[in-house]
Image 1 (cartoon, protein in one colour):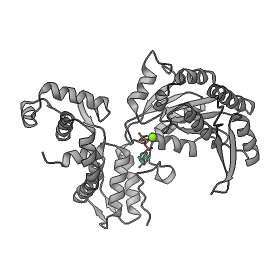
Image 2 (image 1 turned 135 degrees about the vertical axis):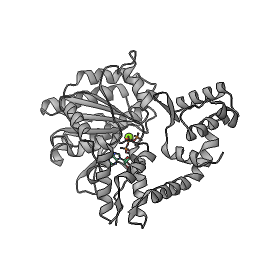
Image 3 (image 1 turned 30 degrees about the vertical axis):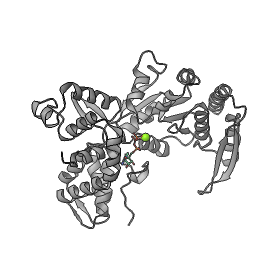
Amino acid sequence: MKNPFVYNAIVTGDHFCGRSKYIQDIVGKINNSVNILLFSKRRYGKTSLLKEIFESHLPKNFMKIYIDLFSITDETDFAKQVSIGIANSDYKKDITTRLKDLGNILKNVRLSVSPDPSGGISLTPTLDSGGFDFLVWFENTFENLNSFLKKNNMKGCIIFDEFQQISSIKDHDLEALLRGKVQQHNQLSYVFTGSKQHILANMFINTSRPFYTLADIIELMPIDKHEFYDFVSAKFRINNKHISETDFELIYDLSFGETRFIQKLCHYLFENESEEINKELILCVLKDITLSNDNFFRNYFPNSFTAAQRKALLILSQRSENLFSREIISKYDISTATLQRALKTLEEKLAIYKDGDQYKIYDVEFYHWLKSIKV
Ligand SMILES: Nc1ncnc2c1ncn2[C@@H]1O[C@H](COP(=O)(O)OP(=O)(O)OP(=O)(O)O)[C@@H](O)[C@H]1O
Ligand SMILES: [Mg+2]
């Protein structure tokens, strides 16, 4: 039987749990062409939520454009990803009309057409390798898109995923250029999201940055525990497995609410032959996962952190309060000042974050690995 718990891919449809309030809120904003910044800790489900909204919660004639900026390193990459997003945009029209529409919007790139496995067509844009003029492309593409929507009395939504990556492009002030477009386009809602929440937040809440006040800010919280339990227990039941709500709470707490890790633990538990899922089995599966990460973290840990940072991480894996107690300072043989400095650098490196006045380790699997190390 196919494992119903997916932890390494974007989830939608049957694999997607809950989030109804967020869906209602975000769909309302998109319908009213309001721009959104969606942020959360890593792997809580931002991309999945937005894809689910595109797949199932917007009118058919809505133009849905998803742009992934994860791999961009310069403005040509940006142009390429935007062109790919537009070329693959989803809206209700027959193939011939779509080809004509998209060809008109993407006048400055070449589009090659090929059949896709689902029986439709796939359009691949290519930018001129020689004389590609970014500013001309930028101006034309966004204007063509806007006039296309206006002419057809359509609305659209552009998702920029991994949007923080645009701050690494230095050739033009892309933030300022985009701000100009975002402000003018009232047929379009722009949704910005990404996995580096600190960089993103800074782009939108810093008064001196172009994106200040340009979007409504929504923070995605962990999926509600009860709702997640109902989802998980129903999926276990299809293979005659049973889990109590208390035992699911253990999974949820061991994952600190991180959606991906909850799915990963459930995936492993589903693979296990035991029908009754209880505390011992959950801890055993957690141990297996931690063990399978051992090679990776044994390499990553010494190569990515200084000795003081390693001590700080080990301390944080054991406790989140009283970090500077005499017992800790002497056990780990580190001065208060050095520990303080290490914590600050780890926070800047996004290895840890502050939750109220406590520091926490960002990556759940790294946390469990650190916790398993005997000091
Ligand atoms: N609504 C959901 N229902 C069930 N599982 C989900 C849901 N949302 C996310 N997940 C789980 O979490 C994993 C990560 O989801 P996703 O990639 O959407 O998160 P993200 O917040 O975009 O991550 P990143 O910060 O790395 O960009 C998915 O592979 C899936 O296992
Ligand atoms: Mg994502």
